Image (cartoon, rainbow, N blue to C red):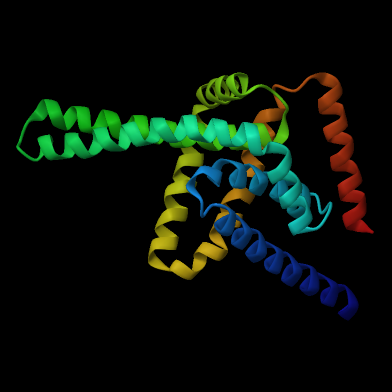
Length: 220
């Protein structure tokens, strides 16, 4: 009993260390703004493979995901960053105009808030999609957008998790080295369930077999 309890405690502490290390890697690799896309894609890749499936080491898996997805993830991110910047500027302009008491500008302000939220969710779907599937940049952006639209309730939850993560980090800044991993673990649970609905039968069968092997490994 003590050995089993000790193993569980050790496993929990090991996962916590991995979670902090993974968040730290993400923060470091995001420092040049143009690498945020590649870093986030590597983050999701490492979360899914190393943390969830316990396959490989954090650093090695993160670096593997970063290198293999760098070109496509960076290009996708730069496109989406341009969209985010445009919406952010629109929000700033509309806030100034709406402060003058114009109802029309207030309505437009809320419309741009919604568009910004949609763009953020689109980014997360794209990050996960590119981490899990091979495709062109154009198709990745398109498919991620379509999947997000077809799964609106989950997309709303994804945005809520994003907002909660940001709020926690703003209140307790040191949590920037933990909350990103918690966030992506939740995204992995949601998005993997969604992605499986669109997988080819042979790919889905392979995924289910991998799940079975993972569970057997956890028991051992």
